[in-house]
Image (cartoon, rainbow, N blue to C red; front, side, top):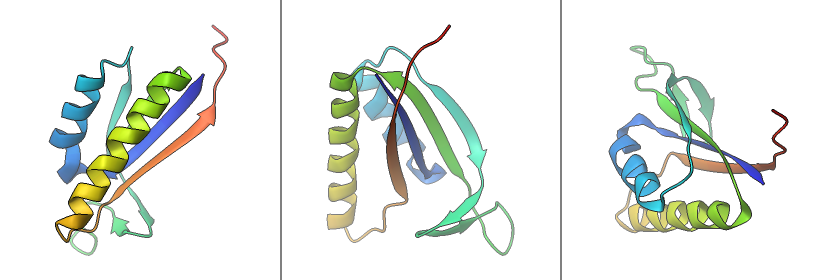
Length: 99
């Protein structure tokens, strides 16, 4: 089992959730208005650093983890080909359900 952590600019919300819904994941948790800094810049929903990120976490089996990774890579490649910087990161860590 993997815990997927997907962090992306809120401007991608509609597209990301359309993809996730199409993958029929068993479930996920969304955290809206996530602030931070990284290789794509800072987002603190302020005048100096406008915007914010969204974050999705989901505990999935290996097969679903591969599906999500594939869908996010395809999205990133497509947006990059259109000349856009893609503020999208996907992390996977081993996960054990305890309760």
